[in-house]
Length: 299
Ligand SMILES: N[C@@H](CCC(=O)N[C@@H](CS)C(=O)NCC(=O)O)C(=O)O
Image (tube, rainbow, N blue to C red; front, side, top):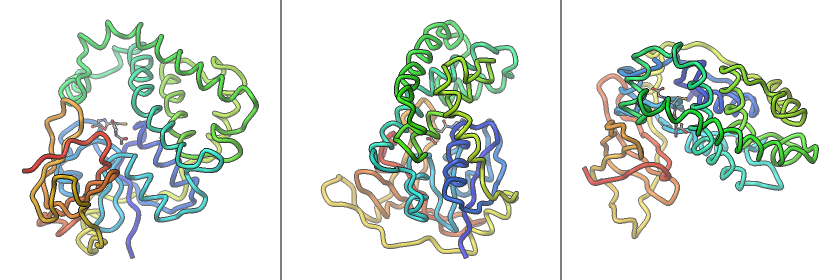
């Protein structure tokens, strides 16, 4: 039977988003600890070179990026939804805003207040892969702090009417993606009650969700698990997207990170890219990416 495996590390904010999603859906999962900086050779066996965290695995299907991971979890276990009414899938738009523009400013507010506890190898890795170079990042911290607080005010305003969660009565992906920004600045000593009671209470409600039924696995166990399963098929490449099924393609994130994943295109539509790849340790896997934020080119 295919297991759900999360490749992550405990302090990863994006990993926390997925752990909250798993707990919310009451899904049992296997935890594989990945390194905080590159290289990540075991992870790359499965992904083909994508090294961001988190990566989720269901058997021999590998999901890169929280956008596609949340879509896969929603398909796997539809209830309770990550996109509760009345917002429905509009909650995804809030989640993507929280995980993109607000997140970089949260990182600025958190890391900028503690630049000396960040090891040199971290700056080197994030500079090369994310453009976060110490010499340009630190002078921009006051601006990022102001942007962080401006965005936090939007959250305060939205919760001020007393709603328990951002979409209303039930939590979802949007809450989890917003929450990790508040958690990130706690690292810099900025506590949730700085933003008022509504945010502090919302933060505590979400904290009660925890991270579900977690069991530690080794990277080897996850790779063996992929080898013992076959990827789920049935995908197609939509017409008029400029690509054909069976073509060799590369996928690279929209960032300075040079890492690209090459494979055979087996699925493509407005939201999803799926490549088939093989590696001697894991056999055939399907690597899934969101279409948003990825550069797709012929290989
Ligand atoms: N768009 C990605 C962003 C993931 C991301 O930036 N993750 C950070 C950690 S939370 C990362 O991978 N940092 C570099 C690393 O862990 O090597 C997603 O939504 O999953």
